[in-house]
Length: 260
Length: 260
Image (cartoon, rainbow over all chains, first blue to last red; front, side, top):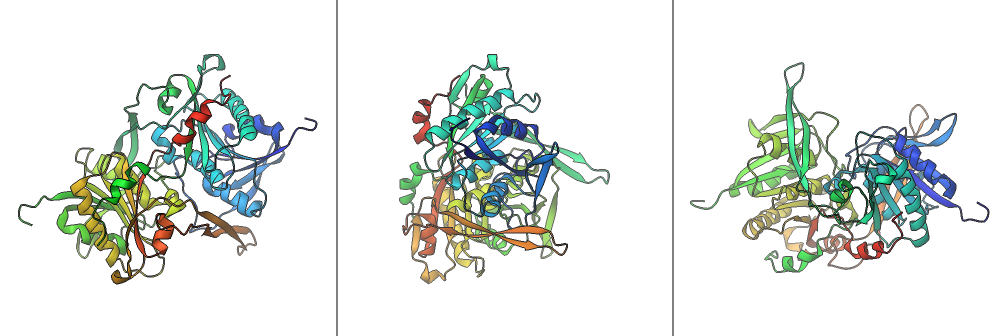
């Protein structure tokens, strides 16, 4: 490395500190500098942007292969970023980059709002740190190699160029061998939503329970949309933010008779 | 009522089915038509947009004052809207309006992304139903009268005019007597963030635990921003959506060297 700058990077996820995708991500970024790993103690998928307010948060050192690996947090991905910065680092030393992943399963389109993986990158951006979330778009195959390699490349690009305040990136990688990846697409969040379905079952005491199933419908055949880009074999990179204001409707709403 | 149209309205919240704010909201909307109440069995604050995927969901009838009041769900606010539509109504009869609240505590600025109250309105909008979330901006006083009255007025306005696809409203009401409310402001989501702090304590077994504290800093003195409008005594109405794409950065990101 010689005189090359050494960066300070937080790596987290929502699949938990034992997840293979987290290890692959850490390994891919390792020689960029000092990698801090702070991740949920257990799997935390679809927790959305939950934070732990009503309960205390437990944090402990997590060892792997006989050495210190990182901190396990009995909480959500958003908790991990908050407690890492405000408690473990005393609110004093910001990272150069926050990376969340590599998630096992896509986080495209409407999934973004349910995603713990994305919520961790959101917390990075709230702290003013360039951040991205990265997911491998499958629940089956588990080769994180292509995603890890892209994470490394994107990390270098972001560290060199920065990101605008409040903007962060959501990356999804198709589960394909490297030679079958068609390229990288900058995309928008898809507007396709779920056609949900609840399976209605009976428990051993004959009481009803519901279990969520369902599938995404109405994905447009448009390679500039995240859902479709990934299906079409592209790595999808979507710039997102945490300002939910719908600016287009502001002025019309002003004309409503809301004042009393 | 006579020949007046009777509407079908879902009322939910994140403070739980026993919360006074939920009752106040239901009562305020009651004579608009048929009000369906489906709410979490227990308090679910700061759950963000969590949904229950890995566990079954329990739903039961909840009685109050000797009669049927609504359905209690052992899940999150987002679960409530999903299970209400896709299971209890078999995915067949959409409401004319979804209202979430009246939350006890503000949901302005960055709080929106942590808010279970807002997530329920988001689910309404995902279903294509006009929706709003409404919160009373205090953890202390609990007079929901002014907020309930405004909820009723806004409900009628929305039922008459509709909302654009994917857009819904986030309402915050200051904890003031009606005569001290300065009016209604259409606002943007504030960009103020939290200066967090974790209290570090020891449990009876001398193990460390962390508890999140902290306060919002950098609220601009601008009545067109939700955080400040509420502080200044206005009812704040913010149009929001669930498209997180940062369109402004799309074209610059296209110039990055991302392709391999």
